[in-house]
Image (cartoon, rainbow, N blue to C red):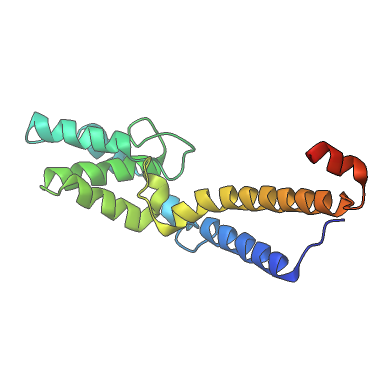
Length: 169
């Protein structure tokens, strides 16, 4: 018979609440106004944007390819045709053209849209909990099952049984 202790239930509830809070935090929920359609002027600015040097153009395109569209599933800002991707592509182009560093652009996008826009998110406490807690949970269950099997094996051994002492000797 498996006993479930109240401390275990409380810990499990805390784990579920913690994981849900990561997915449904206010910074990850999208505003309706956030995904407003792009107008023709923005589309023309993105498609006809001219850089002052080819080096800046390569940096901006590489950075736009490294950032994910917040509206699409798994497309970067260059591949996506969504209005928000065009707006963000224009922001990336303008920031790189004005001389901002790539890290500054990534920090701006992350602050505004969360870690979702990064294909390679930084290692944070939330990420490590998200990946580490399920592994620890499985290890704890395996350990509990192993201890239960060992304790049931010890209980079933009878010290007065002569056949067992003959096998050991």
